[in-house]
Image (cartoon, rainbow over all chains, first blue to last red):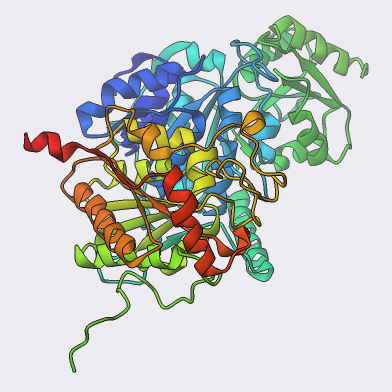
Length: 353
Length: 250
């Protein structure tokens, strides 16, 4: 298969189409607008829908409509826009509807900036909207993964009937890299007997709904949903472990922070420091087992993040505070340099934390 | 013996939860009769609102989706784009459509989205216990306008049909009422028309139905119907506000 040079955002769009998604709804916001522009060009040519909605709120509710009909559908946005979508995401979760939401993160809070960030980690992995629910959260670290994880997200969303979020950042969204795209990226076909496609006089009416006024029923619904989440947690953890086997210092980072960290680890190894990297690819479920395993032999962990320290909490929870964890971070659109990460590794190696 | 009157197939057997004297029941029936008459039950998908009609998903026997507050036109847009050959309707109240969902309403209308919107205006938030609505009349006493709606501080009611007919796109907009036999007959015709337009692919049709809320207006059912006639209809004149078929016929 020939490789083509693509922007990360475009790779998401093309991979979505090749995963069978024919409906896209969005609202312009930097730094992800290339996804909408790509869909605006492609969808009309293949009988699909591209619709620029009047707001992020409307876009996610259009997604809700298409998903109710049992079809693959997506929206994309960046941090402030994803905040607006949270109502709809909670409803999708409450109705067990699959959908893909892409967040190409920028700095916040508020209007923040337009440069890359990872500060929506809490929002993506801990809920975001109201009520008890979780999202499938995947974190690409290359343009190839922007494509591959888009296909994976559609698959997991259908399989577990959960909304999926591709949690990217402005860097990966804007960067160009060679990427391989199979013609058909669908891995399986999922039956959707719950979809509201019209009864055709052949069955009882289907209802897509998240309202349960009887508390016992709502409790039951929540418990059943979490049983499904547990299966997802058990079966679908994705993690890359890089030079962790003999590591004394373990860096944990995802997305663009993981790529910077790899350079720092190479530099550390050249200096004789045994450093390694755990790169969560699923942020929910968090790769707890890999962290626990590393905790058995490392001096400590360094969490490298483009936030004030969000994933660091999950690292501490996973290793049960057995080993120290330090934070190496830049925020507001800044990215830690390999030198900054190297310094953090050296400090941990020297027992400074 | 010939059956001359029966429950429409488009209604389920679930008992309606509406208050005594509320006209939602009549409006449900008119929608169901239109679906039956046009023989589209098997290919219709309805979108229920948040508000008094939230449980409409249990009452209509077609496939149903429950939307977030005000978002029904966006959800209906998704459904229609996904299934252009299905008939999609929304059933919304005044808070849902004209307050929190105004953006969704206006933009679905201006896209001439090929959907049918049934808009029930009873000038009050019923489900939450009688608060001021975007359509509450000037001076109307509600739980959140206890001294009467003061237009100087909270503004004037929104006239949805007048507002939407300022747009170029929408195909059909009509305001009806269900406070008398004559008006119910007209409402039935209008609702049927709104579904026919969609079947013919004409685009956005909205029927505003002036409804009564005896419970939250603090009136008997009869008094409430009288108030529709004496106070609401003069403020919200009945009639066709947009009919593009007239232009097509020229």
